[in-house]
Length: 312
Length: 278
Image (tube, rainbow over all chains, first blue to last red; front, side, top):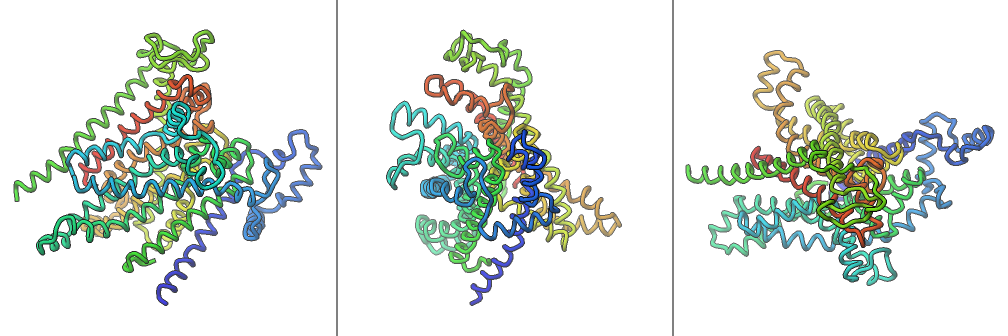
């Protein structure tokens, strides 16, 4: 019961954040220098037509009234209309979600096992050559521009060797796996180092704690202590970082999607930015923020399930 | 005990110093290459040569030529001017804004702190790159709009960092002593607390420079950052993308340049954090 009420509390705390998110995405459009109506109607529109449309869209009302009508539209699932695609932004976004979702799940599925293995090797061989090698490679992975790596890999593995398709998404699960392999690997090259450095630090930190010394004095084997005590205690900080990183990943997958022509949210976002499709930019930004709030919330709930000491 | 502490000192200080030295050497090399670009390459970075286009690397053109016959080596060096400046200048506004907010928020506490931390919660709810692209998309492409976007989005990490430090520092004796001597809140914050956050800020800012550099190059690649014909690594990679199969060098070298510069920054940051014990 108490955990349920804690969850309720946590959800209540989300309300101001959600209001803030809607406010930011509303104000975002106000940043654009041009008149949105002019953009819609073109330069040669008559003054009457412009005035009529302003009236129709409620653009003559004060900003605060405009915000409330925006909020009410969003709550009714109406994110506006895309000028470029001539369809509602909401259903447009839902059309582009699957490839991005698949890509992110793929990246996580590759990154987590790789991170755990490399971090354990690095921590157990601390300050010896495997550790130095892994850490140097990790720094390299963090600094390689993801889009450049993606481009180079698509040229080498896609065009030169012909192992993987260089664009698109394919049909069916296996084709998705095949098409998105290079995009997923290039993104994981950047994600693994970040998680790895964190998990390694957590592992080393735990190795130096009192309960490990106590276990050693009881005569337990190093391998046993590592598996049963150190590893378990290092999971939580890394899980939290993974949550932050998934939210970050949603953003950084944008450029990779462009390189491999994956028909996902990133492609939609860049197309909207280049085509000045303001409603799509606004709707997507809101969608991205909600998605990352949900990810963070899920990770928080998972953390309390794993370690009851953690409070929501 | 003595041998133990000297061993730990060597472990903590020695490698850190080496990393700082190597990292700053890489950064300084790039700064020299950028500043003295015309000395290292006689070719005009924007000089079009329609006869000698898409030439592979040779003694005349170390990194080959691009689709307009421009010398890629010269362009990579000249682009370093923009990219290094972008990495360093892009970090400063978020740092100043974030540090100020974090300092006030942590020291004042109460309602001010609550309001500012809600602002932080709201800003971090948006994925970093998404919000940057959205803001640049609304304001229009260009380096200065990227800086505006960074200032609006990037302050959050600095505010959190400084606030966390201030919460610990404000209960220390030297702060109580300064307050007891009758110094006002501004003097205590700026003269006594702020200097103690510099080392954490420095470590974080060095890592952040890489993020700013890579995000800026990504924007350049998407055509939303530095506008042509100004050479910039991300934009150069975009220029070379249609020719990547036959003329790999147009894309390859700018990316390599960005990687090495970023490597220098992360190495420096890692070394600093080891030496400063952060």
